[in-house]
Image 1 (tube, rainbow, N blue to C red):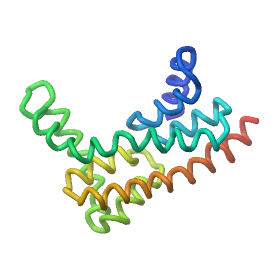
Image 2: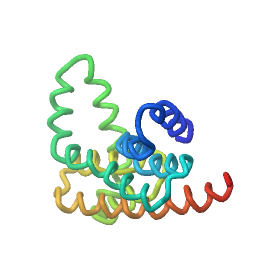
Image 3: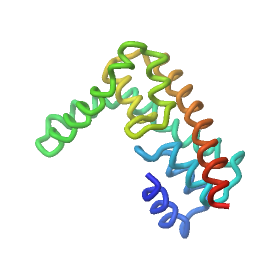
Length: 166
């Protein structure tokens, strides 16, 4: 993830503000808020400025995923070009869904909130949509998870990494 954050930071910084870089990184799957806060720390953007940008950037794609991803996947599965990719994405998401199925709200919140590879708001929203979890419940769980990830990544990016880099 560090390599991706550094690549996006290096390639976007000459063209847009540091705040825009952080916001864009926070919207990208895989990187999300975790990458945004790490980039903010590396760019020496104050945490109080970076955190709202990362949260909003991470939240923006979630309603679209919750509302439309099943229909989009259904359409894409009809094409030869995307059928295997969509099936692979669904299979990978469903492999991670056991705890979410079992604990629903709390499982989804922890899945989104604990920053491990393959977790996060994008994957959580995909799983919630595929499991047809109530949109209000899943939105609140994902938002709670994003807040949890914010605290964890702030401590990692600004306290731990900030002290190592300084």
